[in-house]
Image (tube, rainbow over all chains, first blue to last red; front, side, top):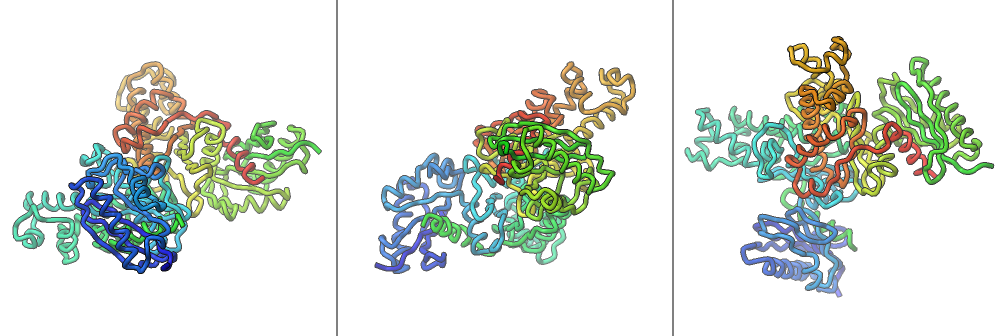
Length: 320
Length: 320
């Protein structure tokens, strides 16, 4: 019999990352497999089961050494029922993933929304370490969020808390995929940043971004904009600054309601660094309650793409 | 020796309401005294001490029968230190009210922000009874709020959570007293409603409100607007509808972040009833995550002006 381990699974639309960790949360092994959601939910479940076994074996643990499994999944999910309610990237609708995995593996399985799980990872082992109440915001293709209050994921009454990306920032703003107008996601996520740059170029604005994509303006992404801004391009800097301002309105609203000690911002767009964080802080200073702003730290996420995996391990540890 | 009681104190800028209650939370007596903050903080503390003794006596309890005291105060307050950080209506700045009262009365005293306390009252005995996670919003001269999560006041890391009134609703909206632009309070509180009506009349719009105040347009209050709207006045109805829309944006943002099962709206402006609640619900339906909207109840507060007093009693009961 080897040493006791827990398993964390970060389930995504393109890949499934799985890690074994010891009971202190230190990662011992990591397995990455493609999700291939088009093969159907049973095949995805099978891939998860294989990953769990492989991750344990790589860590020198047998199946009997696994104490519990934590899973972060795209949502909305129902943490009590253990079902993924709806996940377009997985083409899943009401999939009882916890029941399915417990049936096969005969181990306790805990499910949470992926942004909540990544937030938990940052809280325990990342940029939020030592905080009491933390807000996690991830800005990439979408804008997601998680609230970690007093050491625990706060999932709300029905598992849907933390949908920061769909708070209204500009009441007559652009349409969002969710049907609302002016959501933070419609203003500050990667695609919104790219669209803004493309529209400005089509309106004749001069920028090095045109060269960067060799004239193929439709290939501009938020990464292009971030790189151009870092290189000093005025249009790109302006777009990043405005993105930070929108994000700042969202963060200020969250600070006024939640009064956290720490706000952690992650996801690909957060790699723009101070060019993004400076307008976020400037806007929060203007819009948040002064005493709340003075006491809050607004910091970049510390775990990068591992946040979800580390958080899933933390989720599993909560079951031991 | 009489029966055990707790005391709740609702400290306001104009009056101090104090009640004795039995250990089930049933009110046994009620004492109202003017605050007279201009007489200084020691005089106000003395009035509270007198009120506590009178409320206990009226309930047939001696001082030895009092188990604990709960106080709701205008904020921001520091619940851990037991101080009122800043309360313009009381002309208070860093007043250690808990320490002062405990020194005089030799009883455990618990302090919380008044909106949080009123929320707690609605949660335990009012419109939020039976809920798990509830948001309380009070709309009167200002807009305040309180979060009651899993049975407890959620005060945040520094006691400032629930400042719903200062979330940004219209990013280039009117200036708010807090220094920000387009806060919910600057758009939907009583004074904003009255100002909107006055401005429309000065721009020549026809309305029965002009008659209602005998031409003294400056005397129009949000109550005038509410009454005119109920009487079918088109301008007043339009203003109330727009107020409900602003409030709905704020409520939708809160629902997306907190995912509560119940939102309770109180305060004088909530007396406009369905004329206000219909546009709130319409806007929330448009702007909140569908699954979260479908499960949330948005209801009028049930305890009226007693919410703060009942909540203060609940706070005291938490100390027993």
